Amino acid sequence: MSWKLSAIASKAQVEAALERREMTIGWDENIVLTGFEVDPDEPDVWRLDAYLEGRPTAIERNAVRALFAGKVPRIVAEELPETDWVVESQKGIEPIRAGRFHVHTPDHAPANDNGAISFCIPAAQAFGTGQHETTSGCLAMLDAMKCLGVTPRHIADIGTGTGLLAFAAMRLWPHAVTTASDIDPVCLPTVLDNAEMNAIPLGTEPGELAMIIADGMEDDFLAERAPFDLLIANILAGPLIALAPEFAASTAPRGNILLAGLLTTQERGVRKAYMKAGFRLQAKIVNGDWSILWLRHRFFG
Image (tube, rainbow, N blue to C red):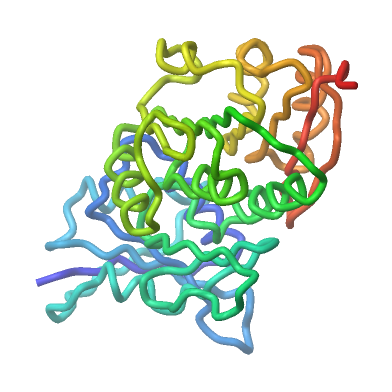
């Protein structure tokens, strides 16, 4: 029989817990999470559900507890009837629209308008399903970059998660050479499965996606494919700052960097690091508490 661990908390706590799970390297993929509003009349009261394949162990309980910073809410275990809880967890996850992109789970249909670019991304996966403000903000920024005439030939998505941002870039610039990488090995089968689901061709030629597991830019394959005209990194502020010199060294002259995963309160530090590395701000989007930055080499003509 399947089981569920549930916790009632504020919307901010549950959203932070879901985000923390996305950033947790080595998360047990058998623990499927979902968070949602409990009562429309009380929009700040949310519930986090963690679906398990069997009776919850102490390790699984502690993994869920660790998602909450500060005071941990009461966590209740419940035995469930046999069903596919991965599918169940995706019900209620509404599609999102960012620019021309429409991102939905398998429980929903693609967009029905001709101008939309639809992607199907299962919700119970690695970071980057489109639901988070940083991912949707990146999609909107990529669309804006296309509209403003950016034409990259070599693209890299560092910290790709589900592969969504790399897929989006490939739809906008179908003849580019595109590389996706992530430090977490679980992302490799995730990206490959999602690529197949969304008819994304795999390989190393123009119009194909090459997916690798790599720690930052320290990888021979990335070095061989650099410099990149467009480098995308939706990770965290700390790693973004630390990687600024490596990203700059891997970006082509007059190239573009799209950065996300930083809070608005962290924007100043990130921008300072990239200004020092030779970039200036071209545009930004503020999505909730998050900043999405488009930077270009300050010497572009």
